[in-house]
Image 1 (spheres, rainbow, N blue to C red):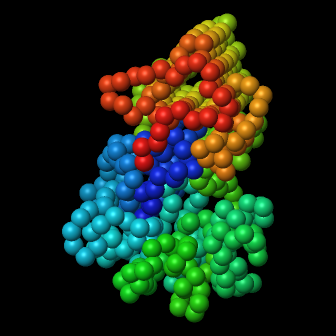
Image 2: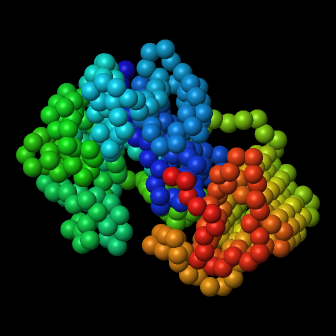
Length: 421
């Protein structure tokens, strides 16, 4: 039996993932055509012999709840332990909306106290990586740590996106900077923590002002209020906190020897799957350097794409450098280039999406969407002959029973519709 139970933080909906999180939580976002981001920490847990897992939700949890279900795909449908989805609630000492990842744990202290394990493994629900947590737990125990944080090297020019951990030669932590403008090091906090349970409960109870593990709790412990160590974790790890990182992580899977091996039979990434017909590629079609999932049909041309199940690329259509989610239909003669298209979208005949040579920032989120990537939200219909430029956002269709087409010419950097966060 493991000495730790896991709590997966899955209550966020990052604005920097744009249209993908207007309709679902971060952890429920699809990845690699067949997975959800939550699949990675869940699979890591069961592959590490951790069968007691809580998933903490808040923002738009419907899709995530349906995906997890009773936990059967991960062998977590157990009467004791297994997976438990912990929702926000009203009433009692801690009932209310969660104000951060540490506050989310605080509002479930009754659950924490009821568990038999000695340690708590805190995980993020929106990171893509494979990791055996058993060496981490052993490292934590060997150092008699109150807190162990996982770290890895990042590019110094990307350090402003992360919490930077300063580590001594004995692996103890002596400093921490949360998203510094000028970093003093390159070891990034991965958002993976091991706490001694009693220590964590005492900390959260005595300091109700602490709402975030990285911003509040880690700096407090480092100032002589506990034993905190860092464990370096090599291997593939991606924090898909913005839409550009999301697209790049999907595209990296198309490399001849990708850093993330989703076909490693010794470390299976489990997911909820449905019966689908095999991929169909028409004799006249062209498909290369792509991931094509079961149930997809290609009659046109596909190159450097991640294509989910139920996608149909009609004759004469050209799709390249794009991530296409479930049940999208791309009409005859349409051209889709450098896009992320959410599920249930219809691209009309001869439409052009991601058209033009101008790469300008999107006027709505210029600091996030500025490389020419065009986003189409769930359920949208793009009219035949429409021309959609680059760095465009087409927000999801939020109207019930109404399906309006987006037509005409949409200039690069524009947005259509509004977010409903």
